[in-house]
Image (cartoon, rainbow, N blue to C red):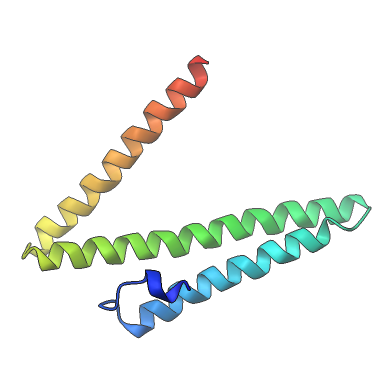
Length: 109
């Protein structure tokens, strides 16, 4: 299912890394869910740590996928390496700007 979302142009090495990160995230999420069944404070703390770690791992997989996809798009457009890096940085600047606007709207409510 996830493999169908990854471009066929990305090498199998990177596909395996991305899939490994997503599978690890799923395992950590399952561990977090199971630790919530504990009635003690330890179970809650374990669930908190595992869910946070799961979030970080999934963000790593998604970030890797985004960077590889942007890099491939820039290469297909015939950009030089310098121009491709500029386009990727512009993409993240736009995301940062949109996040700032979203946070400002949230704070204004």
